[in-house]
Length: 374
Image (tube, helix red, strand yellow):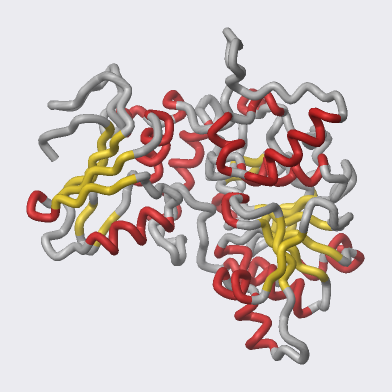
């Protein structure tokens, strides 16, 4: 795709996601919006992976759990290397070590490389395990030939790497690889990059392998001023690392600390990063919807549900998108549901993730606040 200068990270994400869907380059799960996008040809791209010198000499490889990297996980296991996979959203720890059964066939190894296999054939790796990671594989939404990377906007890959630095699992020379479709390799304005953004050393696509020779430094640890209290609450292992660094005398002040008058910038997706075309559907104060309360709301209204939709179908979709509410009010006869979240920030993040969601043949309408006319 052509250069994308002069836009936000979210603008680049939306353009990649839209392009992959409109050109039918995307693969299951779809739609790819708000995901690390799976793509047709992902397995073919991954065939280049074992030919990297960094792969051949590595003994322990960390691979992200997303669909386009499934074959990369299989190749690590087939090569009898140690495979580490981050726990989803880091809720129960940092890593799982995949442990195939003795004498596992290729078919069994392929099952171990799936999301279900990661759950069934893994053991947690603790912070005190003294693990050393020789090679890191991350997913990307967009990446430049200079090695600059944009993820799906939640910051987990950046945080995983920073946590690995803090526990001594990686160092500045540990290579980082991403596997993407050719259309995901784009120009990224350097002005969009921040100190916590992870860069990559190798880009693998179905048609080529790019050595980026990236000179931009990788994160040297956790930037606590960009960690929110909400994130700390959701990620127990992060709390442990923070306590250790606090005892070591490091500055571990969070994004919002009691008594702080100037919160540090958030690593979560900001409203300004959301395309203007979506601003109204997210209840932006400059484009209020009819019947929307313009005060910050902790509810998300989902409308245009199919007449035969079941609440379990919506719950499954919310779980897959990482938008599970504290409470769900089902209003099936009105073809809508109300999702209740802890605060307005959580509601807005959920609303952003739900954009473009379909149930059956229906494209769901999503809005923040007291939307009475879905």
